[in-house]
Length: 98
Image (cartoon, rainbow, N blue to C red; front, side):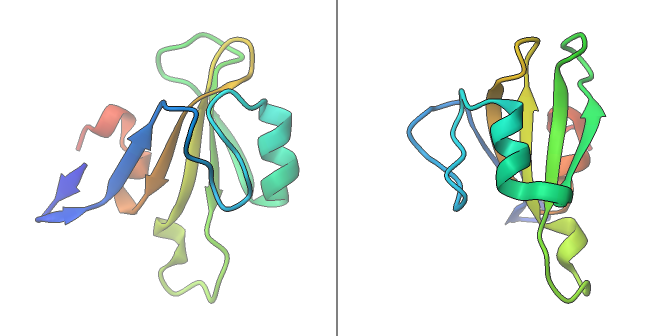
């Protein structure tokens, strides 16, 4: 996603890339929670029925601008990661809608 000529979100459904913590598409929700701990916040998925969810892990740091940066994992009914979004401030927008 691009906002004001800046890339604010990237998404992948490819299993090849992994996060710095080693998470890939296809990994379980539990694996995400173990990797990111208390930083993971779960919210209901807007399209997939429960238990599909958005798992958001915000960046740790000094708090100045960190709340707008992190990773979001979209999980399916089997509680496995379907997509990973590297994010700027636009990750909270559903399907990239502004």
